Amino acid sequence: MKSDHFVSAIHGKSQHLMSLLFLFILLSGSAFAQRPARDSARAAKHATSNLSADQKKKMAELRTQLKKDILPLKNQLGEKKAKMRTLETADKADIAAINALIDEIQSLQGKIMKLHATQRQEIRKMLTPEQRVDFDLKGMRKEKKHRKGKKGHHSEEHRMEE
Image 1 (spheres, helix red, strand yellow):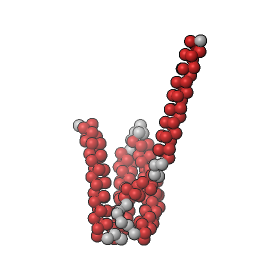
Image 2 (cartoon, helix red, strand yellow):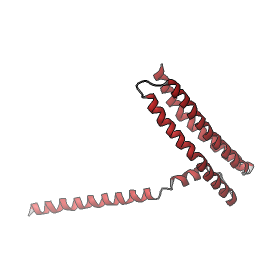
Image 3 (cartoon, helix red, strand yellow):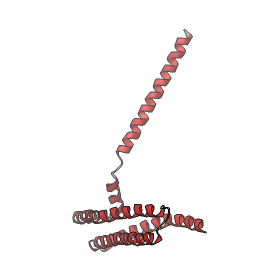
Image 4 (cartoon, one colour):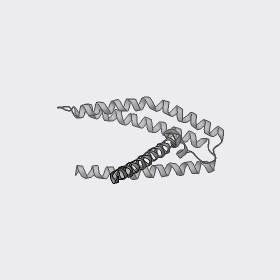
């Protein structure tokens, strides 16, 4: 008799635990499902306050065009970086070929930076003075955050060379 009561008590507790586990999985799944898409989150993050519908439309067109322009450059950049790894890990590395490839990579990175700068200026042209200030401040915060993250990386790299 006592063993039956003990077994039913354990069985009841395990069912309770399974119910809690199921509830946790269900709730955590719905929390992930409600996160905004990456692109829409990025767009919202970089959005300037009080944009008109026309401004939003033009900005979306500029973003799409920028993506189209940058995609082949990023593809070429990826190919060059892969070739760089191959050249650098060869038994007899060809330093002249490596240096030439570095120049090509820098050229591609420069083109991408120029496209970003052009888009930024196009966006600034369509903003009111108040919106432009907000836009510029957001860009400065992003730049500062980016530099702060890079600083630690470079300092460690420098220490390794010494």
